[in-house]
Length: 291
Image (cartoon, rainbow, N blue to C red; front, side):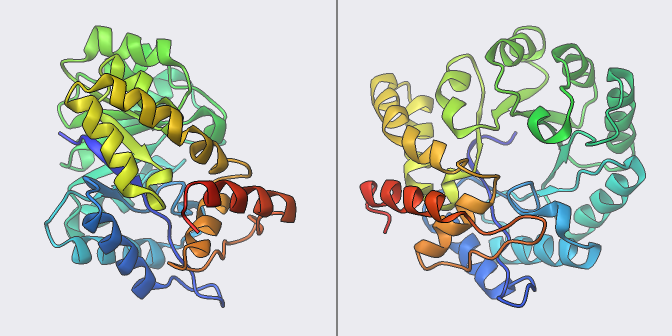
């Protein structure tokens, strides 16, 4: 249902810390102009953890309005509270989102049964296509393949953003439930290997600054131009890694700022990129002619 080059878009702030809606709409337009297939607001890269309810609604609404039906919008509405996730998901549906991105509950560390019941409750409460999001490095726990395979039986759970870094786990999901649930790469540097085993695309951080290039690689894979895709993958590896020299989204917001597209400002407890990391980022971006 959702496939191709999808961007986990940043949420730009003004210097006094408010959501910069004008800059955000310009970033959305930039993505569409450069071939991005799906916009994903209010994910981890969009600093969802520090957006209040009003800001969350503002960002999702602005994205939907700016896109205006041209491509799908998958709203990040996950929470470590099932009731809160349902409430935010309902709001996103009312605003016109095409789908939901639901991060696994963080900090609580539920059992695999708890995870299943969490996602099942959201799916039953909100009639929208839902994308599970497994990111153990952020949540403190891994959603096992068996749990994803079980959830794939629920009709409106259509995909999983796999950011576990475990290709074997993603392969198991595809092997046993690939006809019922799509796998999407949650790590730019694993897009090629995951698509090689059947993933349908990537929800990308790097696409914030290189949307055309991320799209080109995904298209090459979709068209079976594997040698072209391999060379693009290897060429992009340094910039993918640069997006994680410090905690996401600090590097990517800094990179967007260096391109002159929006402020690098992040919300506490995140902090500005350290000077050494900034110099490294500038050097790498220079090699790609991004600045």
